[in-house]
Amino acid sequence: MATLKDVAAECNLTVTTVSRVLNNRGYISKETRAKVEAAMKKLNYRPNEVARSLSKKSTNTIGVIVPHIRHPYFAEMISNVENAASKKGYKIILCNSRGKDEMERKYLEMCSSNRVAGVILFSGGVAVEDFVGSNIPIVTVERFLESGTAGIECDNKEGGELATRYLIENGCKTLLHISGVTGNAMPADDRAKSFVSVCEECGVKYYTASSEVEVYENQDYHDFLTKVLTEHQDVDGIFASSDLIAAQLIQVLTKMGKSIPKDVKIVGFDDVSIASLTTPGITTIHQPIKEMATAAVDVLVAASEGKTVAKRTLLPVSLVKRETA
Image 1: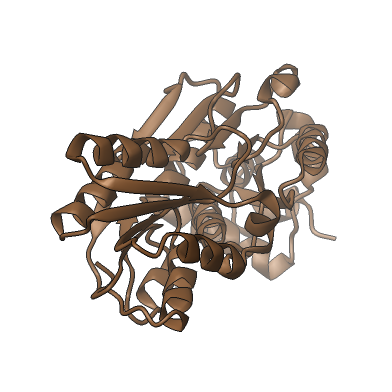
Image 2 (image 1 turned 180 degrees about the vertical axis):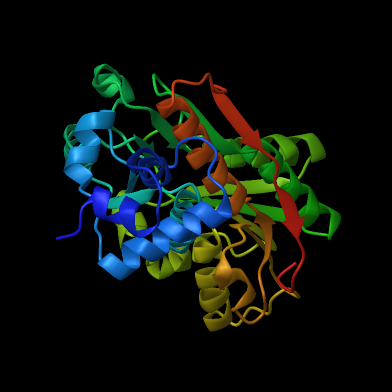
């Protein structure tokens, strides 16, 4: 089995230089990096991650804990986090808590014991302060920061305002906001707060509805939406807190004989791939998923290197006009 010395000898470099390439430390020219990578490939060299973690006190690995991997928002976020981490020479360990606090806690403990460089934690219910003593950076995304290292959020307040005002400006007289789930307080709650605030400011009739945890976990909103829309048949404008909900709204309203956007206008939230795949395409609030993922990785890596990082990063949103409104 090839060793670090073998790689150094193959590319006529010092062991120290090869080590710097492997650990992504200091300036390394593209030519030097290419020579090392070519030698590693030729010799079939595989770095000993355990030994590296013992010498560095951490691995070039980032723990990523999400509540659901099937949800379009988290699927896109995971892909962008992995890409951003790879560009910095890091791998990810993906953990799916399935919305269970107990699973989230176990994964946090596992990441800590496996010497990850840090953890990117998405919406969940476990108190971050329980893990502050682990001395690894914990970066939260779209959840209140508590005692974590840093938090990354989109401007949910602005997003709620943009969506609601757009529906009103386009002639909607009776609005409905559908949020994802009741339960733990999250930054996304600001979408609903903005919706209510704008409706009251403009004197527009409105309703709000939120689903139970089981509906959110199953990601099947059809029965829930049918019930809500049957109860509020005067609604002519809907702000959905996710594109997944908006897509199912199109199906339910169509079955009810409603024309979109003629009878009912819809604005979603996230701007994930599903928003451009439905017929009609979903007018939605663009959440800067790629930028949020990159910011989360950048902040985590900086914190793991002992650098001072911003406690909270708030990224702007924008309205993307398609055919539902």
